[in-house]
Length: 147
Image 1 (cartoon, one colour):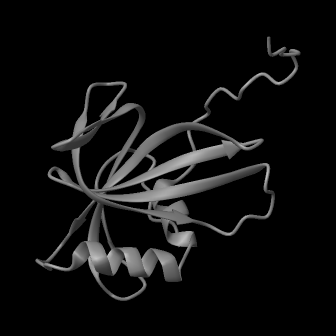
Image 2 (tube, one colour; image 1 turned 60 degrees about the horizontal axis):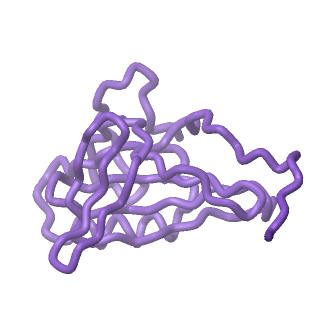
């Protein structure tokens, strides 16, 4: 089941547990995560800021340990977001803010429910995110010397 709309418009879906959710595709590379004693937030390359309240990392099944994806579910002041990071040859590439999830009905425990659902069904974050952005891979062809 594919959740992602290639036209970039929000779409409403029923998750496998029957809970209706609206998915808003974003697809922006996260430029930086900022941590301060009283604040934790992310900024995308296009200037979108999301103030992080909680986060949970999720990893899908790994068939190639030198080339895989990891996901993070973020509860922010601005909403609940799905982020993806490509790990290539044991090097993490940029995090990508993939989508914002909005419950179609009020539920105080939506974040916890969605975390549990994503852990039980590891294909859901992949389906929500759609095709990964083409990011530059590190160049391992050059010899690097440590002085």
